Length: 130
Ligand SMILES: [Zn+2]
Image 1 (cartoon, rainbow, N blue to C red):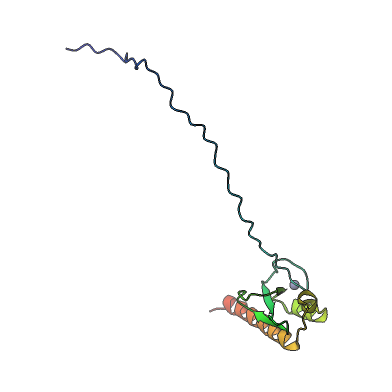
Image 2 (image 1 turned 90 degrees about the vertical axis):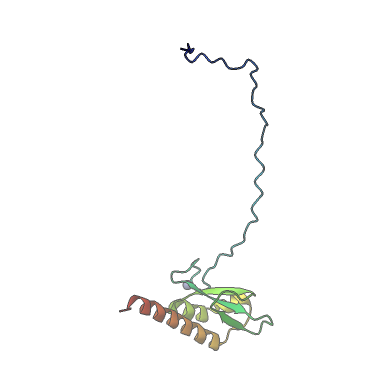
């Protein structure tokens, strides 16, 4: 039989405090401020737009603007809500001209209206799918 001491285990005397390395947390690298240009409708100045914004981009030679449905064209752009009202208002107020400093032809507004109609049509189609 062995007499076991009940939990009398003595820890070694050489008590070592764990090496404490003062660890200053590394400075968080400042995030490169990603500049997100706030898209505002040139007509109603609503950021974001209720129904999405359509982008138009000034041509590099500043002879006019083109629609940019993909939003990927480079160049100075302006946005308008995808609504007939805003497209019409932008036209009336020459909002694109003022914003982009370039003449905007009726063709562009025609294309914009088409884009709005198409968008509306798409949305309608999506909801009335049967
Ligand atoms: Zn608008």
